[in-house]
Image 1: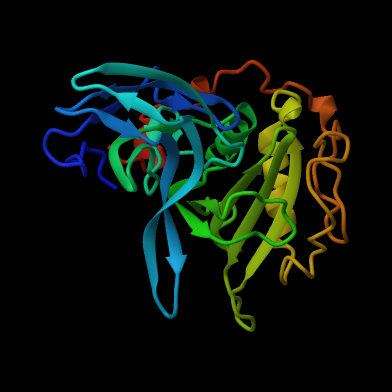
Image 2 (image 1 turned 60 degrees about the vertical axis):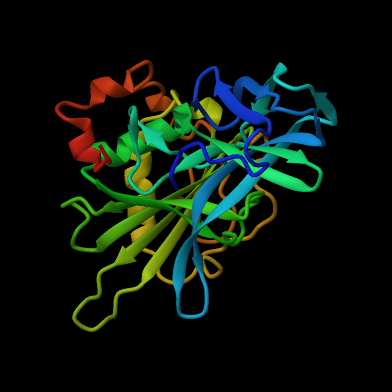
Length: 323
């Protein structure tokens, strides 16, 4: 996806649109603020509507093929019908809510390799739609996301890639038509049992469903296969637990389990509405799920610690970021 201005679909002399974001950096559940600047062309234009939408690149699997397509996943009308006189300048302020499930594009101030996100502005005039302005957007993690990513880093996992997969995760209440996979190479202490780990966050206003998929190594008499774990955490627990200990526990439990999500007891009702998202495990084999306050004794072992302080050296190099 290339972020650049395109020629107006309305031809030379038509109106132009330029969207300016107050700040292109945001987080899931927050907003993007700015204004749409319209400039009239050589004649009066009757604009039907001005629409903003968030777009990203999603991996789509077809018949024996896989390709990436640009997907719009959130849109908002910022203006209904209006008349734009020749050369008239008009600014339309907006505040676009960012969905809770919006994928993370930037961690520790660096773009995650494989991720792209844009705010597209559409101007509709007489059945013609001009998608003439695309602005780069950076979505940063919420505190609980940061703590979990930080724990993977501390446990020695190396970031590989991130992408968006079209589809729904079984047993997770999901509103967007895709989910993000953040892929890591296994750290040495797990390398005997696991090749790679894929981490997925499905976020809502109360907390996060954390889904782990471990690509297990095959043994002498057994073939390798994937194992899954799903855990629920509350936003409020971000600074209450020792996340390195929690994530280590998740990984050990997940890698000791074979079979599908279904066999592991997934799919027990909606997520995030029991006690406002505090993580109570449900289903067989899920005993290791983080219960609210279960690790509260260790409360705040990393509380107040700045994420940046946890890393020495070149973050970009460690996390495999694009320059």
